[in-house]
Structures are given as structure tokens and as C-alpha cells.
Length: 284
Image: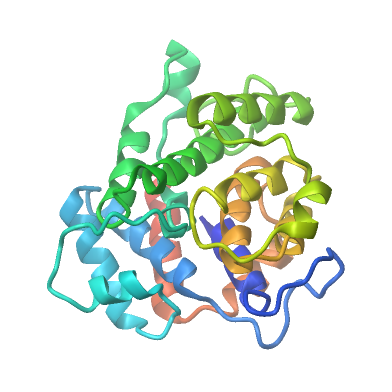
């Protein structure tokens, strides 16, 4: 899930100052973590606490109150600061930007042995969205992102804990299978290239106008850093685009150590603690 956090931090300074180029300093002194990081950590804690509906609600409200100025959307902010525990039919991209931990609890070994899709992580991904973003598009965005993360782990190799990937020497074939699955399962159009998307793409906080573009940014990438640069070069909701792209790219490529350490330097101790506990959790 650190890939989502890297994307959030790198994209933080471009959300309201879009750029349309891949040529920019990866980390600036004025970069910062936003609600994307905070809620990704909240989802991780909820999963570690059992992954039930109340776990997600409790974790999101807990971390929302710990970080009240992280930049939440208007409706989500109202929900965070109220006693309301019911969803509000959102289709915003917040459901996709926070879902990364759920893609890491889906069982590669189960799929390898049975050929079937693992249900547990997928259902938890759905629930992580539904507690607030229960509109079909909000759920779809979260599930598509979680599926892409899982498939990147499964096909690219090295990041499934109990199974060697069936395709570990043909990244083009890996991405082809991810593209075909996302288009068939979720109806997203992934046919446009970044060069076709970039000129007219504008700020949009919906899943349906963020998740497909973020996935294309991964599909056209050559490594983790290139994926982040692809996403930010589109403009739009830069931190969230890069968070979604980064969550998938981490699963495919891993994250270079220097990028990991630089991203961690922007986080405070409570968020670093979540990452430490998460690492222990998924390796257990």
C-alpha cells in the first residue's frame, strides 16, 4: 500500500497546479500527505482489525479526527465529523484511492491452485467502499483497482507470498490480461493512450473519470517511477490519480528503496506505525 502513499505525496503539489509533462522533480520540499494516505492507512487498520463493516467505519472516523485538515471531500468530511454511520451514495474516487490494502489480502496461491478468483479480499474491497461510497460506480472503482493490484501481484511475480507468478518474463502479456479483465468485468474503456487522454483531461473527482485513466497510466509504464510520472502528467486530481496508479505499480514492480525512504520521511509516527503493523500482518 506504500505505492498509493508515494503517489499521493508526489501528486499533492500538483492537484491544484496541474502539469502536463513527465518532467518534474519527483519529491519537492513542499510535498505532503493528504486524505488519500490517511484513508489508505485507515483501511489497512480496518482490515487488520477484522475487515467488518464497523471496523471500516471506526477506522475512518478515528483517522479522520486524527487528521482533520488532510483535505477530505465535502460530503465525506460531513460524514466523518457526524455520528452518522450510514453511507451517502457517493461515486467519488475516494473509494478507489484508499482500497490498496484489500488487493494485498487476496490469495494468489488459491487462484494458482484452483483457477478461481479469491473472494475474501474482493468482498472486503467492496465493503471498504460501501461504508460510504455505496453508489454502483463508487463500488466499481474500488473493485477495479483492487483487481488490478491483485492481478499485478499474481502475474508479475515476486509479490505473491506463496506462489511464483505464472507469467514472470512477459510484462506486455501481464498488462494485456489486466486490461482485458478490467474492460470486460467493469466496462471501463482503456483503449485511449495517455497522449490521447492528456490534452483534454481535466480535474474530476468521480471514479468513472479517474480509475480508468489511472489504470492506463500503469499500463503504459515501464517501472514504478514512470507509472507515477504518467499519472501526474495527465493533470486532473493528481494526488488521487497517482495514488491509484502507484498502488497497482507497486504490486507489479515493487518500489525502489530510495523512493520508499523519501516517502516515509513525509509521514508522522502514527502513519508509519500503521505501515509497520501492516507489513507484519501481510507477512503473517
